Image (cartoon, rainbow over all chains, first blue to last red; front, side, top):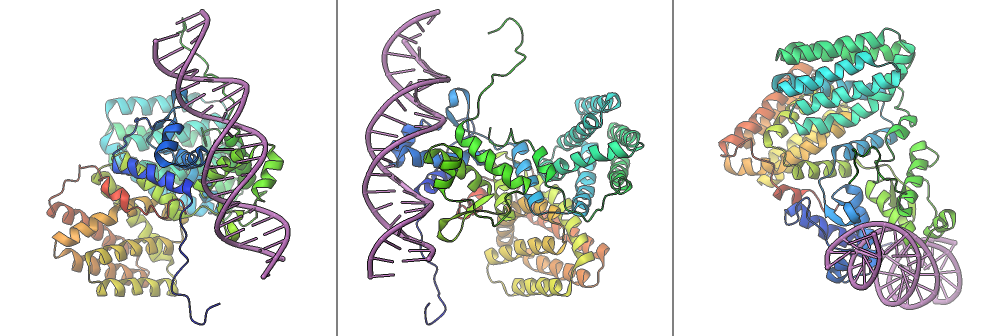
Length: 257
Length: 257
DNA sequence: ACCAATTTGTCCGTATGTATG
DNA sequence: TCATACATACGGACAAATTGG
């Protein structure tokens, strides 16, 4: 205890392994190290940083987790572009841990998906349309609720790619990942959900084909609204937190690979 | 080379340090380990996993970077809720590395910020209003462009908190972080930008006070539009990628702390 | 297709500074 | 105050995998 309020916090030197990570990250963010560039061997880094190999390895783990470096062929280290999927799963997990409610999820998705489909309808190329139609065909042929839900998820991710806006694409992905498992549950307990979903997707693709932004947005709105209705018909409350159970669904395999 | 296309990828057992990280992460995501719970000492983990300390440490680094565990008082390990800021900075960095354009950033922010302010206007409590007004007051008193831009950024983050929607809050944050440094530049080269910004913030707060969702949204739209106009007046092109320079601004200090 | 050098993953032991009781 | 426990960091070692002739 001091007689007066402390003015300064204690000065703590960052651990060596953090400094290693920060130094490498700086090189990457500054552009001096570009995606694809090799990082050198662990022994190289040991020599440059003058720290122990264990220390270097701990620093590398930090960057590896962040997706800034990866182990490629031969497990050699090289600079990498962080993957969207990876970041999105992280964010999704955080949302689950923070116990966000389905209402928050639904509201946000309503905004994000309608915004995304607007851009998609405005910018869809012929190849994009073909991909969207293929997705609709796959959904029409889906036999299980799981498959249907998976295709639905892919469709929305595809729409986001077609929007040609990577900021929106990355913004909507975490909510999209959390949406999917619930859709499986809805499909299993609400018979009319499947056909309605398919119909919405069809109309969205048609609208994209016609470059009709307004119709595309409206059908997406109905689509998201349908999810909510199905959710409530299935007897669940929008004010429940998104279950932890779903977090298991968020590919552990891809987490650290 | 094989005579036919390879059907299977090679089966690789995950390194021990990854398995350590995944095992701990599973306990957290399943809820068996809750935020705040101690994780035990490194020696404990060595005993449980039957691997070397170095291996345990590498695994811990992965989780530490992901924000799932932290070192608290006495550097003891305990489970933690991933911070929004942290996740957002990671995503922002990824956007920069992927060289997203200012146009993508602007378009996404237009959607995200208007959506957020709608919810904020609908749900702002008296305490929220007071905070918003305090932010406006601080901006009115700001002397430098940096301070003004910083307060602007905080204001938008505050609006997102007031929206009471954490999904939206997290979705808009990465774009918000990238917006700020550019605003500083605009303020320095476009004299009318400062007053217009302040005016927009004032109107947004007034609309929140009046629970007027439509007006709040409209002023936010103008506000974001102003940014774009200022950006172009300052002589920059919307189709340029967001500069790497800005990534340095994204607190390296907080990255691994 | 074989071999030698390199590199990673993992392990062991130890020293040091710091935090806790 | 002192002793203990713990995190950080270091040095050295070895097997398996990978590389590059």
